[in-house]
Image 1 (cartoon, rainbow, N blue to C red):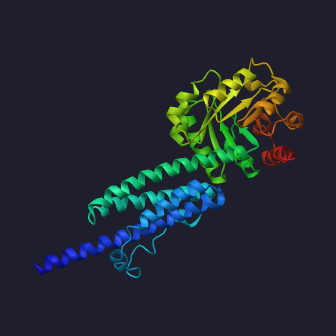
Image 2 (image 1 turned 180 degrees about the vertical axis):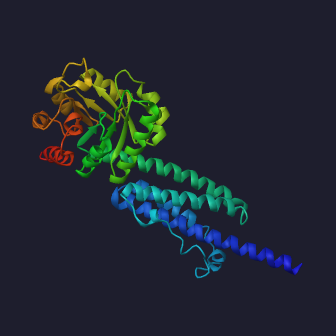
Length: 347
């Protein structure tokens, strides 16, 4: 009888240690996220959500649990992984800490049932709140980066695709669209995954042309749709509210339609004739000037823009431009990227 009681106490102490460790882990992760919301985004609402969750977690951290802590005897204190030693950018830092918090909350939800019948349900609700916070925050991050990005590279099929893209990323590119119309889906999926990883490594947004399914498969930041592609409303249902959706437009009517549909940004063009838009007449700089005066959402001038005419496009009112051949066929894509960006920031 005494032995059974002793075993029960030992199990209870282990549970307390597990709860103590994961309560600490959840609060630490939430504090890291809160600091970025407060100082990085200057967003009091998101910071307030983090603080409220952190305090709610802390309310469960009893003296019993703290007393069970045994840091010197914890076999896990020396365990580490190379991925924990570095963070490529703020996005990877935030995602790592969201994962940390969610895993801790799941542990607290399960082991908490052994401590208090209400603890499991409380942490289940908190876990769902953190999922919502993650979605809102990462969506906010995407929109912030979209607003800041000036140069938008749209890929074309080339043998050295990844080398060119990485060279452009090294030059400061922060917005990439993968566009390939004819390759098999297996190939497109493989290339999209590699490009997404490159964008993650350099802190850039990754957009898929046309294919919502492909965007979902590789966790892209969004899609870009043409006038003949699926309605934005359907794409939004599939992608959720936090991913970006762009729409190509060629005139003021299409612009207003895309805005009314809920596009996050639009393409304005083709400004000049381009082989990537066969059969489409150039809109000229007049539509660029119209967009500069009338478009309330981010917009990108596109179509035949290169180093020889970019300043004309900028003078017409463009602050963001998309390029294809002028970068995909460049001998020194890093330098060309830097040139484009320097011109776009000169005004």
